[in-house]
Structures are given as C-alpha cells and as structure tokens.
Image (cartoon, rainbow over all chains, first blue to last red; front, side, top):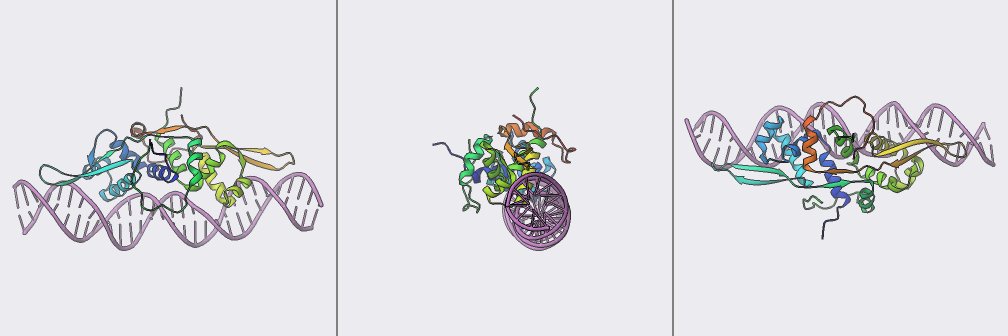
Length: 114
Length: 114
DNA sequence: ACCACCTGTATGGTTTTTCTGACACATGAA
DNA sequence: TTCATGTGTCAGAAAAACCATACAGGTGGT
C-alpha cells in the first residue's frame, strides 16, 4: 500500500520548507551528502542553528542523517536529502484536510510521502 | 513562456500552507467559492482572523478574491482557490535555491506557478 | 432610528520560531 | 597536555507569527 499522506504530514513538510535557510539546506543536500560541520561552513551559518534546522527537516522526512565513523575515528553525522516528491493542489488539500487534528499526534515516525 | 518558479514564490507558497487554519481554508474553497463572513461561520473562526489568513493565501496566489455586489446591494467578497499545482522535489528546490535573495523583493504581483 | 447583514483595520497580548553564545564530550595528532 | 577536529545541547534574547477584542464604514429593511 502506498502511503496516503495525512494533513499532519503535509503540515510538517510545508512547515519545514517555509524558511530560506532550510531551502538552501535541502538544496545543498540534494545531490551530494555532507556532514553538519562542513555544511555549516558551506552555507555560512552557525552549527547550532544548522542543527536546529536539520532537526526540523528530518522530522518532516525531507532529510535523513546517519552517524558514521570516519577513517581517523571521528564520529561524523552525514545528511542527505530523501527522494521525496509531493504534488500540492487544492484537491489534495481538500482531501487531507478532512481529518485534520488540531492537537499534535504522538511523536510520529519520520517519513516523506510520494 | 511558462513561469519558472522562483525561490521567493516557493517560500511564499509553502509559508502560506504551513498552518492548519489556512489548510482548512483552501480545502473549503477548493470546490465551492464563498464569501468571508459565511466562510468564517463555516470554519468556526473569527472574521478578522480569517481575513488575515486569506491575505496570506492571496499573497501567495493560492486563493483569489473578488468584491461583488449581491442582489440586495451588499458588498461581498467572494474567494475561490486558484488551480495551482506545484510538485516539490529536492531537485526543484536545488534549482530555485540558486538565486535565493534573503531580503524580500518589492511587493510582487500575486501568482501561483505550474 | 434601529437592527441585521456585509466589509475592512488597528491595537495589544500571547505564543511560536529563530538565533547566538556558551557549554560538555569525544577522537587523533603534534 | 594542548590543539584541532567532530558531535550534541542548553539558556535566553530577538523576531515573527498568531489571535481576540475592539472599532469604523457601508447597504437595505423594519
């Protein structure tokens, strides 16, 4: 079965994209993966701030991070953009908005829909 | 020429959708048009609040309003959802994020892209 | 005049988001 | 040990979004 997207999924996704920094972040992670310290330097933003934005993007399922060990033993967290693809139309919104819960659902699993 | 979407267009669109109320509003305006007072009653939100949200949606081009005169002479503003359709992918974001201006551009014309 | 509708806006407060500057912890190399 | 690299998180300030309560104007009907 293919994931019928929910209103809360859609909300998390558009909410995650509604920020210039986060747009640049997924743009940077679209082709090439990268680890956070380097990415922070590339985008010229502070590392804690980048960390915050990555959290939001990962929570929406637009980005995924894996903690790896480099050759010299350093723990590095590599991020990459997930291959999401969402077509937004008034009809889709009308569909998902039927069951729209105003209180947040319990900590969901991170996922991006087709 | 068909409108190549810009980063600021995309930002305005996802920013406009990143709210439960506004999602319900475009859902309500997807099929049937409606005027603001009635819509406020239907959605059970205050009229000034609805007005605010409609402004944001219209600014992003997701909704369009026309001021009309009813038979009995009342001025009524009817809103309807525009037939927008945006497919969001990491590639699209990478494309538009190239020229991302951090300062807002002068008050743009309202438009939704394909 | 009053009431019932419609429209718009502005004020002020609450809540959320955004961001910086510390801090703590780990590893390997000089 | 000290330095340079990586990781994460916390506290609090600044900015933006959100929202309710007013207020002001219009029309037509009773």
